[in-house]
Length: 83
Image 1: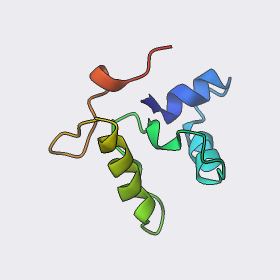
Image 2: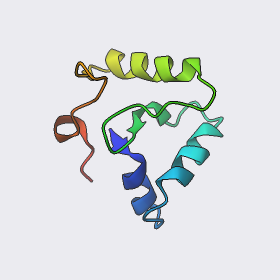
Image 3: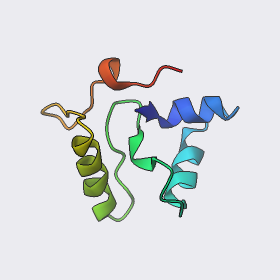
């Protein structure tokens, strides 16, 4: 599990987490694990206009054994990727 900010920093674009979100939303490559990227609060970032993709992301994460708390957050201290 990584945050948009982590991915931006690794790409040499610190502070540009939103650009990572835009890039992932335009992605058409099913081999990229886009569902493993969440926001810095440990939440799935809602798509504009409401989308079934939010629910699909949560279901994919749960299928991988990721647990959400009662507020819909993932404990980053347990699941955050540490390169």
